[in-house]
Image 1: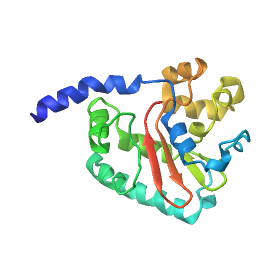
Image 2: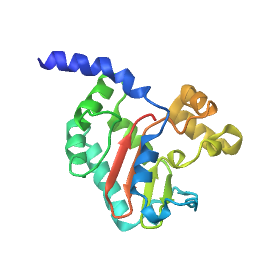
Image 3: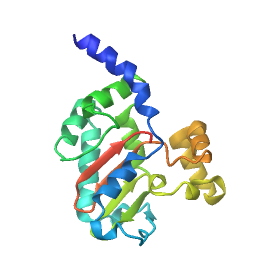
Image 4: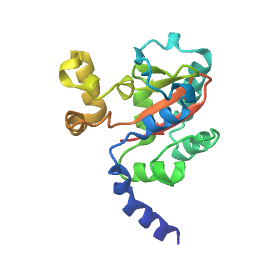
Length: 198
């Protein structure tokens, strides 16, 4: 029975990556924004930084805790850790965190390795007024327009190519938002999401 379930999940995995062009991380961000900001006033632009010393203490502590869990190189341990956060999102369907990440790893996409990679990148800060999100990598906090080739520095072009490859860059040129792993920690230290693709 377990093999049948895994076969069904494996057959559904590609569909998870081709769902609507919307970025669920943006939807989560919007749902958490205070109702008073839902009006016409645009949200302030994100701030970008590579200095972890500038992170609030709770965010830095959460990042360090995640790095410790990731150091065990275990999808099961990562999923158990994610389960501690109410409302945490790992995928676009109804799979558990473990099922989703296990399937990714079986498909050759290692969520542990990818998360270690993005946590080594600069981050963006999205300020919703009542709360801030710290988002890795910083590219995930930028608009499609800000991700266009002519808007990036030479070093940023090299970094984004390393993260999402030529296929990802082509998707950005075609109007999509950042199509790679992204992670958010709220200002109070709550781990909000670890999502792959968009």
